[in-house]
Length: 350
Ligand SMILES: [Zn+2]
Image (tube, rainbow, N blue to C red):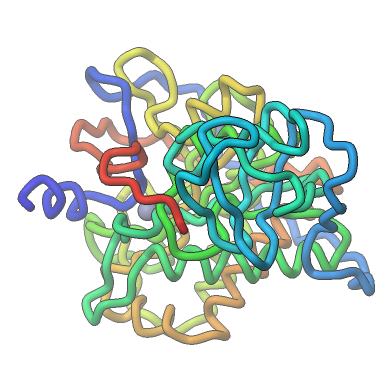
């Protein structure tokens, strides 16, 4: 479709923008100098996933993890089955009644499921959001590597590392399925997480660059989000730069913001999470559309390198007052950043 090919050619993040001209108005402070990474704590002998408690007496709101048998869904508590959700999917729940929980599915359907079909997820400190999924693949590399798969690979590795190091971390999407932007933010909000990082890989660079074209977008009005974006930038760029790759990027690569015409954050994941009081960053780690970058991104060690950079940034955010770096003033953008993120054509993971 023309629309899809157009939007895929200008970026990869699902924008879900408010209508109107693109953002301007600065106030991102001057660049700061990089500081060395803080010493990391010793890995703790913890599980690599957040604890999931037996149903027991659930108190809403919260997050349920669908158990190994999957779950049936019904339109009302105790009602006839109208659908299913697969094992491992995380869903927010808002009420509990007679052994049933009222949930929101990844496609934003309101349904009920037996509480016994899942377990309550412990409170995460961090939610990692692997961009795209299902029939929304995001960007595609020249030889077919899909952004949705790469994003999930990086996010799952980072979540496993953070959990093992004592920073409880959950994913908004646990396998290959669609999940709307409102669902992702609702899930993070229901989990009471402190931070949300949306993980993406980019397309359509301005041209060659001597260093990786990493971009981290922060919530314009949040100093915390700005700091997190600066720390992610500061960790990801040198980690990737160790690779011998002809990099590409935009001329304003860095830690930056983008506003929509209403003056709110352009990217739905940042705007909606800001509305929930959640500190969030959208990270475009590297350019999947660049043949040389796609080739290295097929390697496990490079995916691991990106994941470890995210982990170091989170640990420094939580454990230090480091300011981050790479702050830049973005040039005005009017082209849409990407389609999707809504529920049109959405199929829940049965
Ligand atoms: Zn993307």
